[in-house]
Image 1 (cartoon, helix red, strand yellow):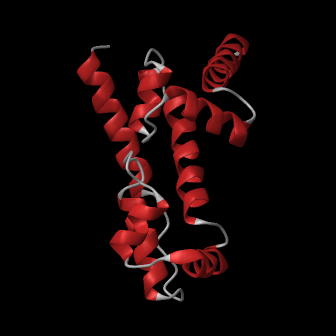
Image 2 (cartoon, rainbow, N blue to C red; image 1 turned 90 degrees about the vertical axis):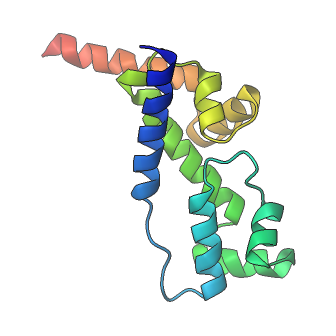
Length: 147
C-alpha cells in the first residue's frame, strides 16, 4: 500500500470515528455542550489541551473543570484521551493499516511523540500498541485457520 493510500485510510477511519461520537446531552449546560463539541471537533489535533479548550470556550479555572466533571463524569482530558485510545484500537486492528508505523498512528491521533502515545495506550489497555496489533492479527489468523 502506498503512503498516500495509508494516509487516506487514516483519514477515512478517523472521520468515521468522529461521525459516530455521541451528541452532547441537551440537559447539560450550554457551556459544557460547547466544550464537548470543541473536543470532538479537535479530537485528533496535537494542540488540543485544556488551556486551548478554555481559551476557545471562554472558561477558566478549577471550578469549570469540576462543573465539567460533574456533568460529563470525567475531565475534558480524560474524555479526549479515552476517545483517542478507542480510535487507536480501530486503527491498529485495520488490515489496511497493518503496515503503518506506530508513530504514524500516534501522529494521526494527535500525539506528537510515539513514546507518549505508547505510554498512554498501555495505561488504558494494558498493552503497548505494537503488542496490541500483533495480538489482534494473531487471533484473527488463528480464527481463519480454524474455519
